[in-house]
Length: 101
Image (cartoon, rainbow, N blue to C red; front, side):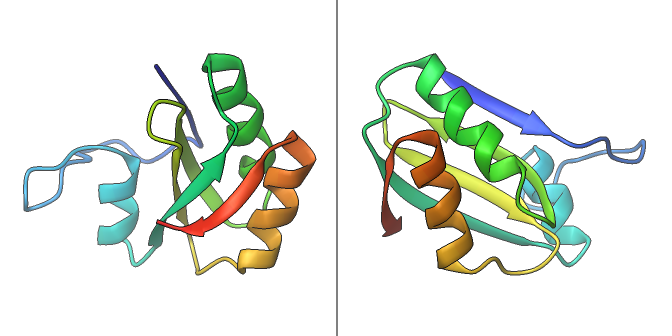
């Protein structure tokens, strides 16, 4: 089970030249940054939604995909985020940021 939040994007293909699809691929083509974090304590869709919602509130974030089964959160952003900003958002959601995966 995963939860993904996206901001609207321009029409066109989102697939990268390597065949991967999704917002992260589109952001990488546009010069964005994709970072994967490990978050401790997510167990269900509600957890994924809470973490995604808080991280989505960070300025510059274009998409968030949280996966409770793996504890991983993939964040696409216009520019690199500080670990402190991501940690604060995850803390606000009630979970623990372990670090970058």
